[in-house]
Image 1 (cartoon, rainbow, N blue to C red):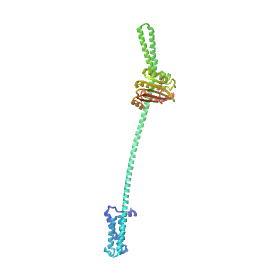
Image 2 (image 1 turned 45 degrees about the vertical axis):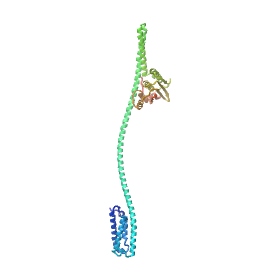
Image 3 (image 1 turned 180 degrees about the horizontal axis):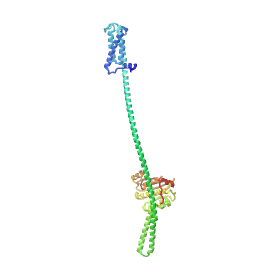
Image 4 (image 1 turned 120 degrees about the horizontal axis):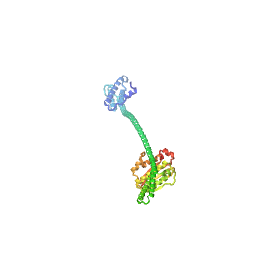
Length: 419
């Protein structure tokens, strides 16, 4: 398929690059020869006028296409050829007539102007071609960069899709593991609550057994000893043994009663948490020698038995820890009912809980165990809250329990069946 005429003309008139020296000067010589030959063909028509027309055309073309020097060379060669072969006297380089001299001067002036204009236009064309080439190269580089960018983008999207799929799988596995772990922790926590509930039931049963069986047996022994004392009469040695036996029986009976009350005080079921707390605090002060300030109202609304049991166990555990670990000389107890919530506060002036143990207690969100950690689970099961604050000046245990109805406490998961 042939190129259109404008494209072919543009290719013919396009400047020859500056570095192609031989091509430029060869084209200038060829154009000079062509101009002379063309003038020879037109000689029958033109005769003795317009000798330099074809040379002017050749000079103009060479100036535009080949540059300044080739244009000058084309003009000189063409002028010499035309002047030698066609200007009278022909085949001579002598100027005979003044009119011929005027024609020569006019030719050189016109040729100089054409060469200057053509060279200037050629320089602009070359700069324009260089700009076009640079723009084409830049466009090619940009297209290449865009292609590479698209390929990199496709690869990146593929990798992102693969990585996203892997992360989704890992997330699903992690969610499954978290669900299983939460379920296991919940089951473990409920098992811990159930075990502590069974422990309370067993304590109540043992307390009643001690009170009803061992206590009654010791009471019968004491009455028997009294009968022996009345029958012994005047036997001094026997009276001394009877007195010793009577003292031992009193001590045993007191220890059995104390153990029974500590396991499960009857006052807790009969009179409520307020009376049981006052009784326990008085006994604790006598046994430990620690000064205790008890701020418990004489009368207050009784919570459900489950709440009373949890409050009493927290009080019992807190005072036991004060006696065993704190080295305190003074402690205070405060129990109150405010805005439908029971609040129990136990504080001391001891050495405080080590930071490591306190942090372990706060971080063990789902742990099972005994002591304060176990009480915290029972408090949380009743929708309450247990907080511990401790430093070098002492420790404070705060318990808050909502005033639940009996049905609500049963739904919370804690029930203490009667022994």
